[in-house]
Amino acid sequence: MENYNKTKQASSKEILHRSKVHWILAHSYTLYFILFLASVFLDFIFRIKIFTNLVMVPVGVALLVFASFLILWAQKTSRNLDTKNISKETFCKGPYCYTRSPTHWGLFFLMLGFGIIANAVFVVLFTLISFLITRFTFLDKQETVLAEKYGAPYLEYKRSVKL
Image (cartoon, rainbow, N blue to C red):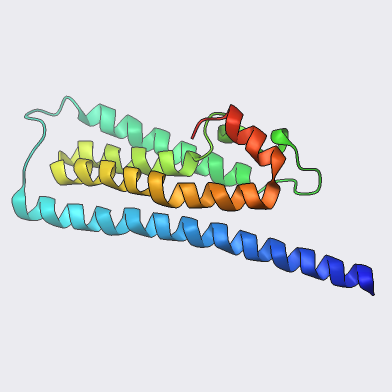
């Protein structure tokens, strides 16, 4: 019975940490979405263009393709986290070997690519603002929760992989 209670407490603590991380991520993605909508609205009203010709459109398309690939790769990789034997290598899989926040980079490149294709100054500007706010607000909170949850293995991973 005592082991059952410990297991129940451990799993409820894990659910709490997981829900904190998902809450943080949901709010950061919501911020991206709200600022994206605001930027599209402002670009529709003011119609300020960045480029005078279509030379940058292929760059925007390349960013959209790269961003989509990065987001899908990150989502597929993050589903297979082995929480039984936690080590630094547990976290270093797929795009997480190169950055601790591949989905945020993907959102950044996705919005930036769209802004370049649409030749929309406010979309590009708000993309940079979204990225900076999420980086210094939401990602720092997420890192704190993950460090609390996984301890030394996550901190070792954090030291070896850039954000």
